[in-house]
Image (cartoon, rainbow, N blue to C red):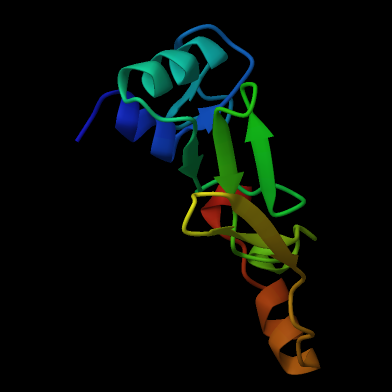
Length: 121
């Protein structure tokens, strides 16, 4: 699958115009113009996406047209980020709950510190 939907869900919002190659070296970045057009065409207020580590667990971009929700606290055992979930009620009103990583056992931390994923190389 390709197009705006795939790029918006798997790539990153940025302060650019249209789509450009991502500074992360894979995927794209898209600008507020794309978010505004997408929401207008699809008659929605905003898009909720993940797949991007954000420090406080969630982040709004593009005049609140794009919410990034990241549910992995302390990503890769080294990012120090919070995690979040977005809760919607029956009236589609939202609120975010954030949480920190659970404390880890020393043996787990030692093993995790030896992991060096390609993403951080």
